[in-house]
Image 1 (tube, one colour):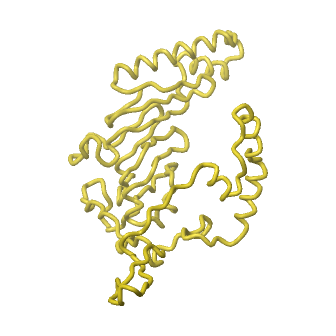
Image 2 (tube, one colour):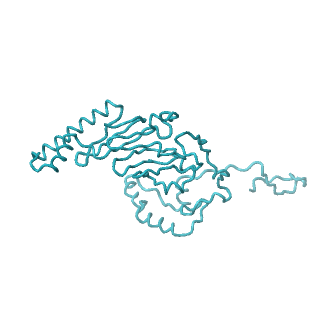
Image 3 (tube, one colour):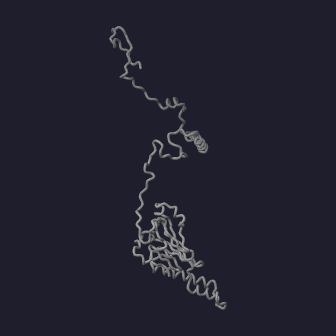
Length: 287
């Protein structure tokens, strides 16, 4: 900025004029007016007040076209700083968090062998009695690791004729001798018989909440009627309504039986004779 012309400022004779540029005292600049700013940015004259709302339509955006354009942009290579969403996360890439102990997990509790565990050092549970099987099956469990056997979900033991016991949730079944633990008979289930001296505490191993279903549970009179009907052709025939009423009344008695024996009645299928109930822990349950 050519701010001042001062004769002799730089040591020349006073009669000689020279040009001096003062960088320390810049001349103040006037700010732009609104009309000047619009002219510089090529916006033209400001719209009149009565036409402001009408002129705003010129600035509307077609969202469908905008979305279509953004979709087309997605097809191109991503040149931004952030990684693409469809690229797999690589924990070993520079700048990404790495967990050096990602394969390490918390240790599982030590297995304490009792009289209801296998004594041969094998972790897979044992179930060899006739008509008994489990879910998952023993063959599947043979391929489980110790950690998997420590937390088996919804483990169940079945008897082909009498029903099943299911432990909902996670169960530690490492090296359990199920042949010595679970017993299913007609109208009866027993887990950890009272003869076992080191029976686990309530809530431990399989002495915990479970759902039980017993098969072929019929009213005594209904069963007697069916047996006599097969043997005596002159037996009095009961109507379907009478038979249904008999079975429904028996379901009510089963519900009361559960209430009196600290277990929860869940269902009684009158057409199949299937009685389902749940227990918080185990003693001998049944009729």
